[in-house]
Image (tube, rainbow over all chains, first blue to last red; front, side, top):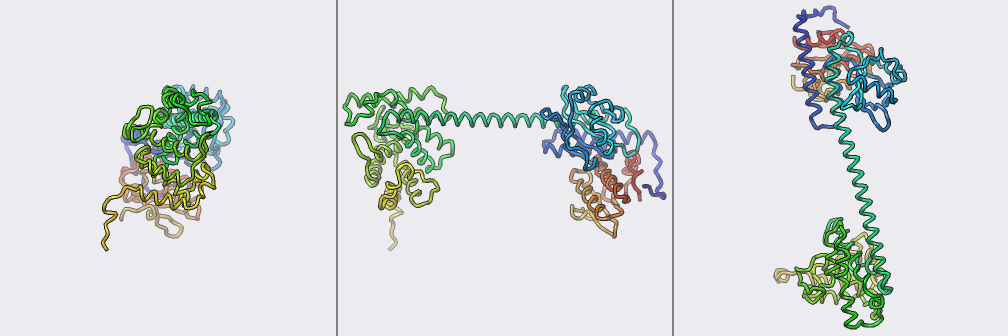
Length: 433
Length: 105
């Protein structure tokens, strides 16, 4: 529609050609910049489509990305193609071959009727007035296609126009190739993540199976390793460790007695206090455990150390090496608390489980001698929080049994013990009365 | 005229919508102009006037968005008017054949 009063300016044909070139180069430069900018893929493609349509004043068009898996051209952006234009266009192998043969040069819809693609989508292309299909190719691989309608001028596409479209198609191809590469990387990363998770599950299952195997040797302490693992997990969680570290503490607990596999069953199951020779045999299990676990590549490095040093004491009276406080790996101190608590709260061949008040008192007295005090308090804190309903988990109830956890005055006892064990400063006791 | 924001680049007078192109036309955000024109055309608008008084240059994105407006208007039989274009823009639109589809004032 044109205003009859409007006087068309007289433009020198050479100046017009120069103006067109400047406009086209501007679009090409912007397109290059757009593709190298790291913004969203869809935004890049939408902008690219505008640039390609605007550079030659093309009335409508769309960009599709080729999927090697579904063998389809999936529309990423479109303008003016109408609501009925297919969102996915299937390609047969012959189409792909012909597209590749076109080699990033626009195919005229009117002259490509022999191709299956143009036969199948003839009606859609006609309704949407698509004149050209520009295959997007990079290193011999079909990446997508650009669909282009008629020019605003009504003129046919010249060879110069087609060269411009080729140059622009190259840029859009780069954008799609980058996206494909990123998608492939994401897929691989996801695959690796899944593999890693599977590996972790396998590792955990193996660890649990090992723990069960260890516990089977000793009918009185059946489930001991699993319980120590769970107590170790509770302490680590109370200390505010992260999920990986908590898992590591649990594994260290599960495997701390792995060395017992080589100790004779009759020594482990002895229904009496074992003699010095038997004791010496039994006391080898931390070193043996270390030797078993050391060659394994654990996701948690301290697991072998927990096995080796879980019988060490802060006061240096433990075994196998008689290490003092800071020389003992922290994980071994943690497992020591969990191990000792379980030993005191389960029936043994020569000893019945001890009542809660005795166990708490024993641990309090031995804090700073056998145990690291902060680990004892962390343990008690975890237990108390569960008793007070402040923890959603019912770990201790499951491990110790309901009756044991409902020992009269247990909560108050733990609270008092924690108050007594809490590090104090003189300021706490200053009175202003 | 102050720089029109997204909500402010339209002015309606009867069944005419006046669009202030500004610089928004030359960015992806200019798609909003095209979308809002489409909405107004659907709502019965018979004329879209694009005011270029604050537009120094129109790049390829701008051209594409304008073609979108022209295409939508053609679909409803509405008229598109370009007003206050500078000489460079007129020449560009002439070269690209856009002026065949619009009234230039």
